[in-house]
Length: 251
Image 1: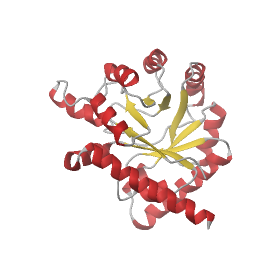
Image 2: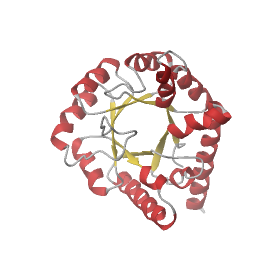
Image 3: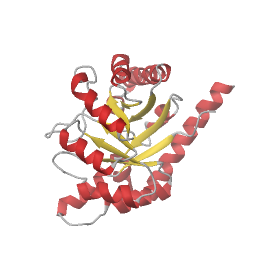
Image 4: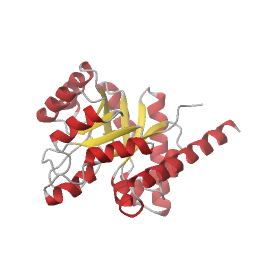
């Protein structure tokens, strides 16, 4: 049996609420600690170039105060590379970033950006940081990740989360096939973006996926039920879906 499906909790939008008033409350580091106690296997934080939510000091505090691996989401810029090399998080997930976007809109172009990305990945890896690329569920992009030397990919599930009916089924089939291809070519496969209580089970049931990263929905749900409750429910849904999938495979 494969290891337990991991859950990474993104605490960016606790910082979004804090920054709306310009103060220190609510504290995203406190949220990270609560997430760890509730069953998160890691903490994800995206330090954007415009610092719209997570700040530099948040990254420093999470890395030093939270007893869970930090997945540092970053654009492939010299500034972010310097910050990653300074703090040396467990992992760095390279994501596309546009200043005007509300949230990450799609996957990184690992093919078109090959020459730009290659030195970033090499320097991060040389520093002992596990590199992942946030990409679309496309075999060509997965093959490009291998050629770049990235050991991990995170499949963008945002389109799957937005669609319904047959279109959603089609997008899910792309994710499932991409995850299987990732495993075949030796990549560790993660997935995330837009996942909720209602749509997480099919993705969690893909046995080639070893980690889900979920943030905005959990922080929003915490307003109504509390962060601990939201994470525990998500953890339970993920575990059930994975157990059912493993059981079906062994039957």
